[in-house]
Amino acid sequence: MDLIPVASYARTSQDSSQGDECGVRNQHRINERTAAEHGCIVVATYTDNARNATKDDRERPAFDHLLADLHRGHAFTAGPLMGVVAVADDRLYRRPEDLVRFMAALTANPGRVYVDRDGLRDPYSKEGILDAAGSLQGAVAEGQLRSRRVRDWHWSRAMDGLPHSGPRPFGWLEDRQTLHPVESALVRQAIEDRIAGKAVAEVAREWTALGITGTRGGRPNQQTITQIITSPRVCGFRANHGELMIDPTTEKPLAGSWQVIVTPEQWSKVCATFSAGSLYMHRGPLSPRLTRRKAGPKYLASGFLRCGAELSGGDPCGQPMGGTKTAHSRRSPYNYFCNGAAGRGCGRCAISGPLVEDAIERLLFPGDGRGRVRLPEPMRLRWQSGEMGFEEKRKVIASVFSGLEIRPGRKGNSTWDYSRVVPVWKWADRVPAPDAAA
Image (cartoon, rainbow, N blue to C red; front, side):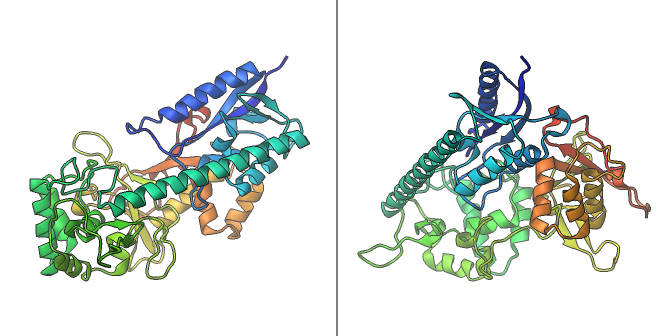
């Protein structure tokens, strides 16, 4: 009997503390075993590591890619797909809209199967649909209960004046109560300097020159330093979910149990030197700014590019490249560049924004039709006609590439060199060796 080719999907909400993707690797291992036990074979893997499936503002590029492949009927070079295997339903969906999308993709062609550790499920039958709906109801209830417990736990800790859980805050020792003698002195000086008019970028350069790193090993930059010195923690105030906790007895801000770095007056003064969108209580990728809109990328390739300039040791720089406007070029009104400020990157690599985006389009939709990927023709038409929106294009890019390395250009070369854009394909075990945009 021929084995049924299926896709293995794995997802975790959080990675392990070692960042080794152990959870998703174990899920794929179980899926391989489950598939073999029920007459199936895994021909393609899709992984969303550290991706939440409960909140509607969280992206799952591998899940989106899986649905696209199911609609198309095959997984790039892996061949036909006749089903999906997962360790549990809640790995695939925890929201009604995701269940609808998954079932529509899975049943886009006849004869498909869904496999979990309980065996084969017929997604076309009434029983199969009821099983899926029951799993969804249980997942939603479990998620709501867990979220409420976590919120109550954090609120109770805040009302007791206890510090936040998680990594230790910069400026305090591991007990989160006692001041770190070196870091707290740096924070105090930075607050005093900022109140006196010093730029945060200058503070970042000074910290970098001293070899200071964050509590997770990162280099200091303007954003992290701004968050550190505007955090209410520096003056002893306790916050939760972006709001100061108020003592119900005194109706004043609730004081924590840790040692303080500056006075509340100094904290208020340093906060006054920033716009509301820069303050600790307003930071985060999903936080509202003054416009009440979520912050998002401005340029199409933002977040995907890494600097490929060679460092002195021979390794590539590897730092993210940001986008910025250029003043005097119609052909390249904006560039992507490696930021050398505050020691975050080498600062030796920049590339035209339209060149990068043209190269990405060539990689996704090669003219000869013989590229590394085979995306649906309607998708190509919508992309190239301008019908496809900015966010949808970014989702397509995220579903195909893990990133793109930008190699340094040659001085004096006025022609566009597409080979500078080197893709890092997702699911590299299913795709031939990477190649630059031709």
